[in-house]
Image (cartoon, rainbow, N blue to C red):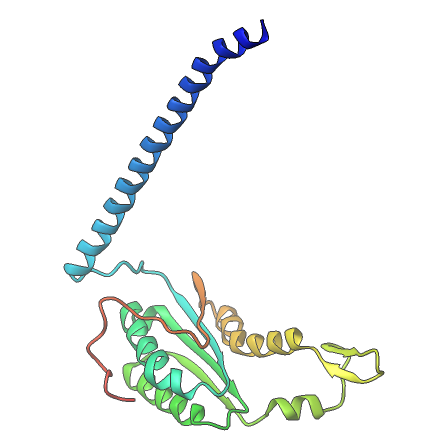
Length: 205
């Protein structure tokens, strides 16, 4: 009797399996078509030279340390192209650098000159304070921790948070004057690009 019941159930399970596989196949096909349509629309917009950037005010912030290579080869040209796409009336660039011993400072100084020439509002701080200076200073009440060996050490996360807050400071100052932004875009030592790429300033670095 039990074997008979199992035989009767097998067609039911097989039908359910077929229905599940069919539903999965339909879902997969629809997802692929949807993705292709989105990709096609974006590609067509790029070919026609249209920008997908909305007319929003963007606050761009970043902190750098010993990033000369990525700054000169990728970051600075891409940032300049991005500010040109957004427009000087809708963007502010805030960069904080400290303690670099490579060519990061001269590269960022050059960026400051180019942005000034393009009319891009900005604040670029080049600080000589190094991490060694920070950890050699007098321990404060915030951001320091006592190790099991009894030493006071500077915690990494609060230290980086303080540097990011310095880069964010112009945002609050501008807000107090009535200038507000729709988005904050943090761009540290990452490679990015703007499409279509700007033809300007590509040979400055």
